[in-house]
Image 1: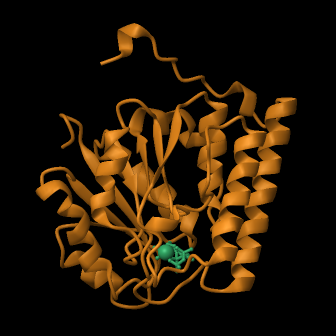
Image 2: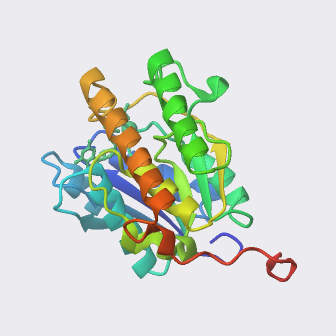
Length: 262
Ligand SMILES: Nc1nc2c(ncn2[C@@H]2O[C@H](COP(=O)(O)OP(=O)(O)OP(=O)(O)O)[C@@H](O)[C@H]2O)c(=O)[nH]1
Ligand SMILES: [Mg+2]
């Protein structure tokens, strides 16, 4: 619990046997163990021991058969909301994120609807991390495109899974999420900005991966995902500009007034 609000962590997991159990424990242990109420691990048709290992922990096992990072995360979000979470933290179980950084996201959860991690802060990129110059500036450039075209706050990372969304904010755009593949993250941001939600980025640690990489470990996959993100961002810009696809008609989240400030 975080000041009376239920916190759920969701992990998309595809063949993550090397670190899934440790990650579940790490995130349950945040803040001494009283902060995270539930860790939901979404098994995405893993062919290794991921399912068996999740079931051996106090985490919640969910199977998503539609293959893809976006499908796994969409399922995790829906599951967490249905199970009564107030604050949902998205993360990865591959050792790249530190459970303790959840506290940084929670620190902003009162004032913002979405709190996005950024992995591009030089001092927090660990030596073993897969965040060389190309990936770092590539993530930054795509994030800047999103920021400028969608009138966002300062953004410096388009691909950081570690983020928090308030469940009331998630419900505003949940039905409009469409991306099931690896370019899912910017869609959430485009929809949140179109809905007038409040976003902020906070720097998080980015460590070396445990187990085999599935997305940014390969140069060609990275380029493909980057291109998909750019066309998604441009597509949403066109939809907003010309009021297509129901984007301009998303229900606007209520703006904060003095009365809603705590
Ligand atoms: N690529 C991929 N990842 C999936 C899928 N389903 C779930 N995932 C999970 O999504 C997360 C992202 O994949 P990663 O391989 O970590 O990709 P990345 O974070 O870009 O890069 P590295 O962490 O450096 O390998 C991991 O937690 C995967 O287990 C899927 O169908 N494809
Ligand atoms: Mg990863």
